[in-house]
Length: 122
View: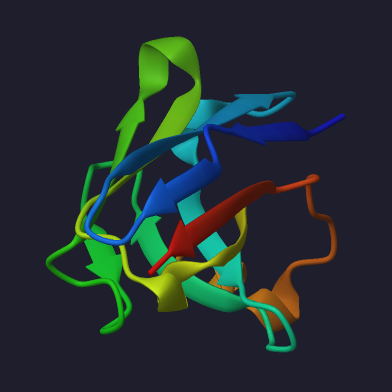
């Protein structure tokens, strides 16, 4: 049974930083692409960062240059370092795992964890 547990969210002022963690179990972590998503209030879930099993990364334009996705295969954990946070970064952040970048498009994902809330005040 796949389990993904997000943590590390909180309330931060604009310009601040947070580091999110995604602990995975029930999968061969090192073989999976990992992804982070964000769902702002009243908006659809947005794919914001992905990292391949080999460490290649892709970012949404909205977070490029400010967010960094990484992974620790020994700990079966993915991370999202978020710097220079803006109020528009506010939302619930989710992670997921899959066999490829395309498989992690939000429309193709059927199971989600509880997410972690990030609130950025102006």
